[in-house]
Length: 115
Image 1 (cartoon, rainbow, N blue to C red):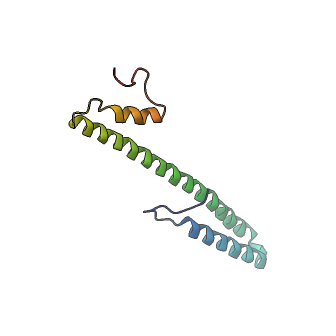
Image 2 (spheres, helix red, strand yellow):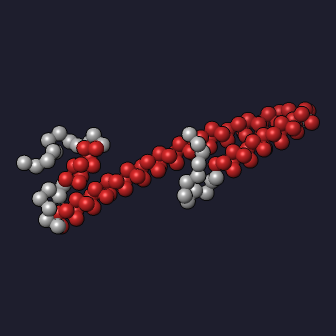
Image 3 (spheres, rainbow, N blue to C red):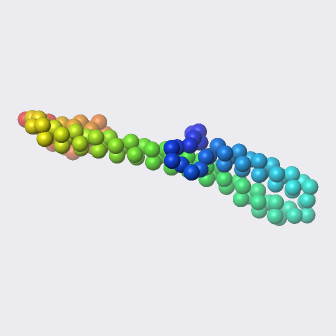
């Protein structure tokens, strides 16, 4: 999954990944130039190794949040349509909620269209 940015996000994952790669290369260079500090360089490289996994997890969470927001918006639209249909005196105002729940496979048994 690509690490794209979402509106309102404070972290640009592409920039974070690029800076992490640059930092890793710098630490690798220092490790070659100053092998006596091998423990320090190993520690820093291990810390930098965590960044790609964290970026991937953040990207997954962003996608999940986006899907949740869309899900909520869809349910809210169905609820509003139901209330408007009731207000307008439609014969079956619950149609909108039933339709949305049926599309999700969440319509309770016996909650079909009224007779």
